Length: 317
Image (tube, rainbow, N blue to C red; front, side):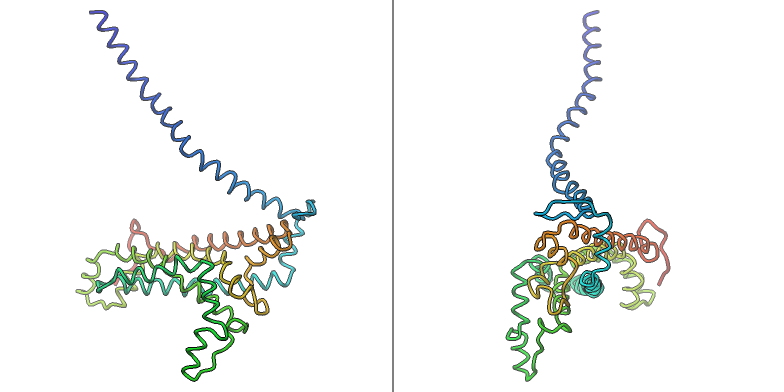
């Protein structure tokens, strides 16, 4: 009898200890699984991030060594006319492309949200440019379309219209580059479409009974309920627009007369072509701070226009 009691006690003790050991073992196994990500983050994210910050306070040159220069590089960023003009061009590019891209994405998503025949085919057709738009091949194709003897001017000539020099005229070059980015609205459209499908149909039915038209439904029901998604797309598209490089580099190489030379091209020229790693890092950090401030501004402003479902509903029909 005593042996049975002793064995039961040992069994109970084992059962008590095992969960602790199993949790420890599962924790170790989990650490093993995420270890490659941790190593990759440290070497390919955190280390370059910290190194670029350090280099921005030096005259780091790929072949001439390194010495500390304090804030000299940052002063150069804001006193160099080419860099300042590039920042201005980048702001014009972002201010133009982001709103138009979001409007186009929301408009197409709103149309595709209706039950129409072949809607899946249209969704795919509109989404494909967002996959291919940033590629080198599409940039080359875009350049071919808008050359002086390209397809666009050929079509205009058949209508008796003399097409302009799209890529060699400073008045048109940035517009053409901007159109390429606006054309890539597919990813934002898919996100908007998912948000539109999440709006309860009962709200539209109730508002129709109350006499609300389509425009009033859109402004008082649809927009408030999808405003978190609008906010998300606004922030992500703004950051991506500041990072644009492929299109201007391949299509115009920053010309004509530096009219399409975005800040990313300055970073490339200083760091890759001129080997001025320190100055290039400083410009990159200035761009990072600008994007961070704009993001913080967006988060601050969301309290005024972003509606969340767990909040008390504001306004009405």
